[in-house]
Image (cartoon, rainbow, N blue to C red; front, side, top):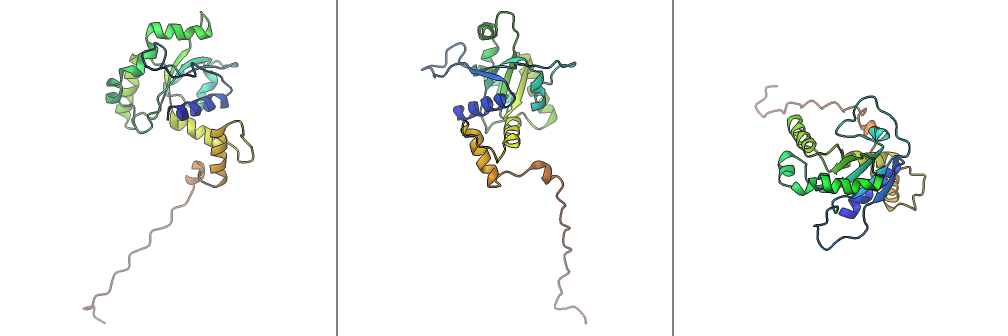
Length: 210
């Protein structure tokens, strides 16, 4: 699952014209390496200036204002990143530790200050629980998160059925699925009219008078 999740993240950033470098191709025998939890370095060649701070939960439109970032992918797709999950998974925050982060940031040069982005399956839907998770992530040094749903939705919407994506297995698979109508357009679903409910007709009883 790790390779699939990383492929989704790479394709997403490349779709938005980022230069993407994977931290390392091999997998070590142990997970004790200081930088093992870092997956990608991403660089935006033409970042735009934003008058206000970026939101913590990034959408696709926000990427234009990201100049460079260290990205960590947590493809635990059956889990929600609630406060309990985050509290009992301290390894998630290993890449923001000063020594690890400083070594990784050298990939962008000595004077760089890349964002620390965590790619997560989902945050809690309930507002209070979501804010608690965001507060905990911020307190640990995470600058922003991107949900997998945001990435997948963007990849599906921007993949065209009349193009041959032979350089990308992921985009080619999405294209084939779209061609066979396995994806429905959400914007069209919003405007579908609901069928009126049929009124229940009273059943006749044997004792009914003529």
